[in-house]
Amino acid sequence: MKTETQEKFDRIIKESFIEILKPLGFKKKANNFYLPLEKIGHIINIQKSRSSTKDDILYTINVGIFSPEYWLARFNYNNKDVPAFPTEPECLIRKRIGCMRGLDDTWYTITTTTDVEELIVEMKYNISGFILPFLEKLNTEQKLINELETSEQTLLHTAAKMTFFAELKLLDKARAEYRKISKENYNPYQMASLKEYAEKQGLI
Image (cartoon, rainbow, N blue to C red; front, side, top):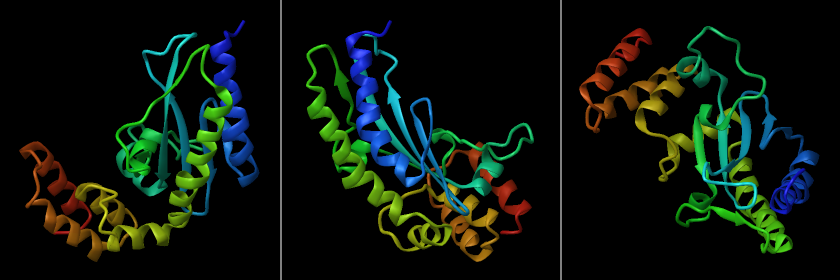
């Protein structure tokens, strides 16, 4: 039997995340929501803290942009097919709600005394005011490419951008990122690995 706190958590998921995301086509698995698009995918993950108990739940929200090509290059360790429902840690781009709102890392607490109505309003504000606009800005592969090229805000570290561009066969863009790598703080093992990848992709 669920505790009062667990029931509050379920209600928050239902009345904010499911209510908004399901009509938009997001699929749900556990506390994850996934929207497969033509060449990329959008993921929203509600992450419980490991310190959570059945009477005291601490959680945050993670958002990801999934790229099949990037997954095949970086996460396909056992020659598997691209997952039908990928997870947020496997994403090309990953953001947490605090960062999206320009705040410190933000976690929400649910206990028996929590005003669940207030928290539902807060979650709807997070989704409609920050998460969906961020995802809308990056809802096609071309928009993602354009953003990575032109944005002053760094969405990806240089090695990840190089890999993404290389896997899409945008070799001039990948070469430009590789040229930046020698000026950045990668250790010798990482540099050797990146050079090997660059050679394999014909970047050098």
